[in-house]
Image (cartoon, rainbow, N blue to C red):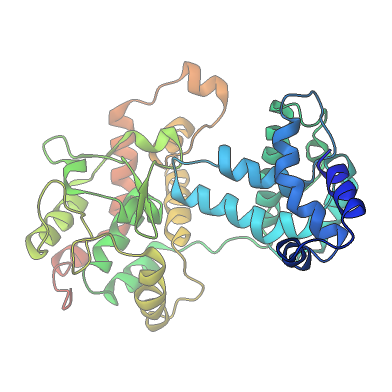
Length: 360
C-alpha cells in the first residue's frame, strides 16, 4: 500500500516542489524508498493475518523496539549485536518468505567464527521468526530447520590444582581473592564482580548469588539455578574476610571487589591487565575467566560428586527435567563436595602465605 502511494505520487509530480526534491535526493533509488516505508508497512500489517510483504530488517527493528530482552544487559547486547552486525546486513532486505533453511545454513557455514557463535546467531534468528509468528506476520519459522552445531573447535584446557597455585602466587589483591572465588565456587565472571558483602551469611557460611554485572551494568543472573545459596568453605571465608579488612568498601551494600571509586570492576579489564600477565609469569597459556569454571566442574567429577549436587554447585539450569522435579541435593552433601574441591586449591603452605599480597 505504502509503495503504491509512493509510485502514484512520483507519477503525478514529475517536478516536485523544492522541499520534495530534497526528500527525493535523500531516497535516490527504489530500494532506498522501500527501506524507508518498511517500518510503516509492519505496523499496517499487524491487524492482518500473514500480512505481506515484510522484510527481515523491518521485523528486526520492531523486535528490538518491542521485545528485546531487558532483564540481563549482556543478553540484550548479544541480541542487538547479532541482529545489527550479522542478521540485518545479510538478510535485512529479504522478505520473510524468501529466507530458506539451506541458505541460512550455508551462510552460517561460511562465517569465520566459532561454532558457539554461529549457534548463537541461529538462536537469535529463530527468536526473531518466533516474534513474527506471534504477531501473525508469517506462518512458518524456517530457522527451525537450520542445522548448526555448537560444539567447541578443540577440547578446552583444564587447569590442574598445581597450576592454579602457581597463578595465585603471581597475583596481588584483590585479583588473588577473585581467582580464589572463581576456583572455589565456580562462579561466572559477571557473578564474581557482582558480589556484594551483604550476599554472604557468615554464620551459616553461605553466599547467595543475586546478580551479574557486565560492563558496569547490573542484571539478573544467567539462570534461575544461579540464584540459589552456595556453601562457602571456611578457608575461602577467611580469605574473603581478610580482603574485607583491607578494602575501603566494607558495607553490606558495597561491592566485594569494588574499584577505587566504589564501583564494580570490568572483568575484561581484569583479564587483560592482570590475569593474563600473571598467567604468563606462571608459565600458563590461554587463560580466560571460564578457565576457572571448567576445572571446578572437572574436580567435582573427579571426587565422585553426585550429578545433581554438581548441577546445583556449578550452578547449571538443569541436568535433566526428571532430576529437577524429583531430586533434591542434600545441603551437607553439597558442602562436603565443595570442601573437597577447595582442599585441592588450598594447602597448609598456601594458607600460611595467602595474605602476603603486596598490592590493592
